Amino acid sequence: MKSNYVIKGIFWILVYLLLAGAPLLILLLGEMPEGREFWREFSVALGFAGLSLMSLQFVLTARFKFLKAPYGADIVYHFHRQITFVALAFFLVHPLLLFVFSPDTLALLNVITAPWRARAGVTAVLLLLALTGMSLWRRKMKIEYTRWRIWHGVLATVIVALAVTHVVLARHYLNTPLKQTLWITYGIFWVGLLAYIRILKPILLLKRPYQVESVLPERGNTWSLTVKPVGHSGFHFMPGQFAWITIGNSPFSESEHPFSFSSSAEQPEMLTFTIKELGDFTRTIKTLQPGQVVYVDGPFGHFSVDRHPHAKQFVMIAGGVGITPMMSTLRTLAHRGEKHPLTLIYANRDWESITFREELERLQESLTLKVVHVLEKPPAGWDGEKGYINQAILERHLPKSEKPNTVEIFICGPQPMMNAVEQALSNLGIPFGDYHSEQFSLV
Image (cartoon, helix red, strand yellow):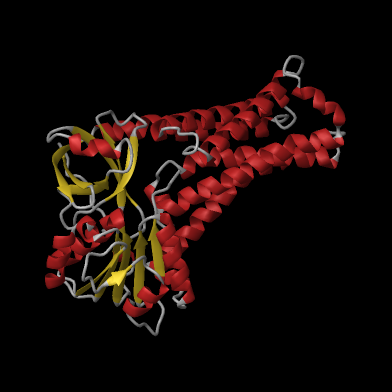
């Protein structure tokens, strides 16, 4: 199965490179404009490359399951963030080269006298700077997530539209019927993609609603939200995956959030998400009432033991509400009657805040499961692990493995914890491909 994902991953990388390079290929077809020096042409090429990368951002965020499956949603979103800086660099260097080698082009910055092609291009660059800044400093600027998400989508669409307008009005590279046809085809593709994301997919979700079955309190200031499909059979998922949930609105709303399943994948007729109160949206979970309509878009993610059938043992390292995908895994394995040796290393602030504490004790009776609790503030007389998960704790409790791919390790929790655990595993000589992390800081 792992080799199958590798092949698919390589295939989609090649498709991405082909789509990213398509505008440059179009640029090279047919006759080139005469009397234009190298640096001007190089500047134009960078502009085309930046436009292509910005357009492909819509693909990366469209939640195509077949696209994200080989990598995982968090990897794709991380790439989405990083490639934005590359596109921004291309957009900035494009005019800077013109200003350096053709100083007369500085006049194009005068929005009063500049032609519309220049106004469109300059505005696109300024908006991209604004979009990048809002994304980098959203929390510092105290921009609420849903509001940021709406503006993020609007600005991205406007930027691409202005950049395309700039290309069309410049006309230097639309000088043959073939190029015009290719650009029209390229434009139709992006319009169709946007229509799918904003219109078709919400309509499909609208036809597959869910309703709240129950909302139950858990330890650690968390709530387990259980929903069931209405008028359809729902969907199957792998343990450890997640879905996007929209509550109290139509699926056309931007108010949706990602949460891991905590229920068993062997019982897909009821989906449970265990959610900790951490922000404005998560504080509303406990107020939901049975029968209330919600929409679920999923499943997504590669964080699953089902992707590693070759493994002889599984280790799960969780911090706080990061236990959620681990519980889905443990419940699923219990329903399947699995006998793989399992180790759970679970960090919490104190004994009373351990989510699923009692169920974990029961699961040790039905599974070959070893649970190691790590407490930051342990009770009096505690003889277990204390403080934070570190290299010494891992060395004491990780099963010994002489061969790669026999022990698979899954990590989920606060970002500092995951960083520290990954560094410790590296220090212990654990192969990089044998541990996997899941994070939800997607923006």
